Amino acid sequence: MFIPNFSRLVTLSVNGSVEDILEKGTKLLASGKFEEALLLYRKSPDSYMAHYKRGTAYIALSNCRMSLLDFNRALELNPDFIPLNHDTGASAKISEIHKLQNQWEDARKLFGNSEYREALTLLDKLVESIDYAEELRELRARCYLSLGDVQKVIFVLNYCPQGLQEMRFGVHLTNDNREGLLRISQIMYDAGFAVQAVNELRECLRLDQDDKACLSLYKKVNKVAKAITATQEALEAERYSDCIKKASEIVKFESSNPEYANQANISLCHCHAKAKSADGVSYCESVVQHYPESTEFQLYQAEAYINADRFQDAISTYQKILEHESNNQKAKEGMKKAQKLLKASNRRDYYKILGVPKSASKKDILKAYRKMAAEYHPDKFQGEEKVQAEKKFVLISAAKEVLTDDEKRTQFENGVDPLDPEQQAQNPFGGHPFNGFPFSHMHPFEGAHFEFHFG
Image (cartoon, helix red, strand yellow):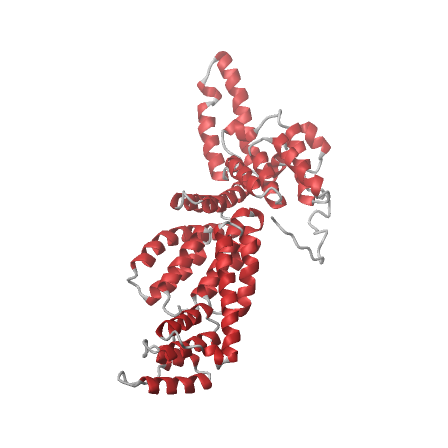
C-alpha cells in the first residue's frame, strides 16, 4: 500500500467541507502533487467524487490496484455515476487497468501452479506499466528465486541476485515497511543469503529497535552470517585451519537448510584440499555432485583424493577434466603428480611412519618423532627385538629428516623420495639445477617480470 511523505502534508481543517476538499484536490492534481492529493481525499471517505479523484491520482502513480478500488467504491456510493461519459482519458485508463488486473490474476495463478517462466512473461509486461507495485515486484522476485531453486548451476550467477534486487525494490517503495523488511529478510535467508538478510534486518531494527519479530530473526541470521563472513576471510588469508573451523560452524548454526550445507561444503572442500587434509573427500564429492560442470571443484576433488592417498581416483578425475578441457594446465600437472605418487605408493611413506597426517605442521612432526624415538630407541631392547628396533629407529629418523626439511618434504609430496639413491640418480640436482655450480648464486630470471597465480 502507498504511504505518502508526511513532510509534504497539506494543512486542512478537519471540519472542511467536501467541496473544499474537491476543489483543493483538483488544484493539487493539476499541479502534479499526486501524493498530497491522495492524503487530502482521504479526509472525505463518503464522497464518491473524492474516491474517483483519488483513483485518478493513483493512476498517475501507476498504482492500478488502488485506483480500481477507488473507482469501484465511487460506483458503490453512487451507482449512477459514470465518469466514462465525460472523461474519455479516464475511460481508456480504466479499460487498461482492467486488462492489467486480469494479467495480474493470471500471473498469480501461474505462480501457484509452479509455472514460473510463464508467470515472469506476464509480470515483465506488468512492470512496464506499473512501476510502484510492491506485491507485483515481490511475486516476480519469487519467480526468480523459484527458478533458482530448480536450476542450481545458475542459481547464484543469475536468478537469485535479480530476484532479490526486485524484492528489495518493492519493499523499499514503502516508508517504515518493517513487515516488508522482515518478509524479504526471511526469503533472503531461506535462499542462502544470510549476509544480505542481516542488512535488511538491521534496517528494520533501525526503524524500531524493539520489533520482536525482526529482533528474533536477526539473532538467528546474524550467527550464520558471521560464520560465513569469517569463513571467507580465513579462506582469503589462507588460514585453512580457521576456515575449516568456521565453515563447520555454518552447519552447526543452520542444520535444516541445504543451501547453507552446500556453502559450508564448498569451503570445507577448498580448505581441506589446500591444507593437505585427507578429510576433504566427502565435502568435495558433495560439491561436485551439486555442480558437476565446475572444473574448479573437480580440481579440488582431485587434490582431496591425493591427500587421502586415493591416487587412482585422482587420476580418473583429472582424466575427466581433460576430456572436456584438453589444455587445462592444472589438470595436466595434477595428472603427472598423481601418476608419480601412484607409482611410488608401494615405497615407504614418511607420514605413515611417524603416524602424522599430510597437513601436520613441523611442530607436530617433531613431537611425533620424539615420542616414537623414545619408544623405539635400540638401547631399550635386547636380541632380535633390538635389531627390529634399530630398523624402526632408522625409518623414524629418515621420516623426521625428510618432513622437517621444506625442500625434501616438497620432493616427497611430488612423488620423489629424497633419500632414495635410485630416484636421486634420475633427479641429480634435487630440484635445484644450479646447486653446486659457480653461478648458483645468480637469479636466472633477474630483470624479467613474472606473475604467479595460485588457485
